[in-house]
Length: 424
Image (cartoon, rainbow, N blue to C red):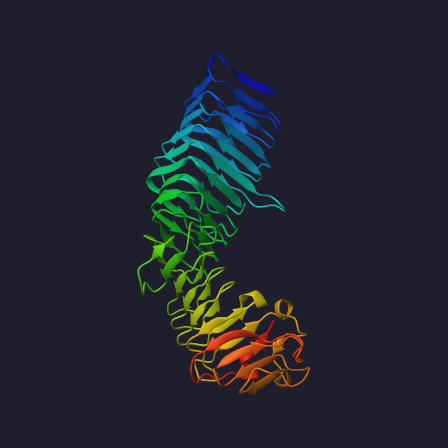
């Protein structure tokens, strides 16, 4: 069945119960209204609103007697939903496109559903969703369906939350924001993603909640709260180099200028010459491409420069310097410490990226030499620590037929042993 409302006003006294697979089309000059819930939806309903919908309660309600298996709802450019609540959806595989206007007294989109194998839901908003209640988009307690929200319009709440997923939502949700969000964003449980590289703004805090979350900041000033879990500020794909210290040891600049953060453990840089600093926690700091300067500060940090000639300072703690391929070598390390209690650093080197027949595990002593030059002595030698200038070299064959290459230049008085090199 297809319900058409093209050039007329239709008043509902009682909810219209749709059958599975039914369609609803409300044309540009159509208007459907009532004081009760208007539509009770089922699996497979396809709804297009190009005109107006108004309700004192809920405009569209799905899954009152059990979750539905999918539905498609679209608001066209001139579409309008004005209601106490625009949508209650208990189910999976929702596809919701809004290019119109949604205005509600309470939650605009109320979501609850138990994920099923391969299920996922998506909300695309290029219009406006404005709520006067707890949240414009609300993933309620018990919501385990993963949601992907793509915003190029406006999502706003005159209360607290623009987007709220309950902490019991332990799936990995995504919010791609190239529009405007007014109100707090709370991503809930799970390892979630917030991405504003397309130019999105948020007037409020962006919270990761439980789980290991990833934030990809935009150019605007933003406030991030990692909350629980191991959370990352990821600046890849941004608009230039980044200057950031998790302990606020220096003023943020570049792509991070104006940003504020708490509860962040890890940072990923850009393709530019980044300056990245950690704090007293066990940080993972990745420079990506470019000639980066990376400071670990206290804690057992994992430091990785990526491509480019990078400068490292691990600080106190048992730090790890990561090299995944030969294109990443040639760095300067200012404070490498070997076998010191509480400050015992390591090199972590990829067997696949370096070649030379390396095997996983701590480097065998037969693969290592300490000498006044950088010359391998037999076919087993792969790493040579040159004592005259405190540099670490790699020889792919140990015969000299392939020239040795410098992995890192260390500070005066530094020492390196085979036990300081771990292959993965």
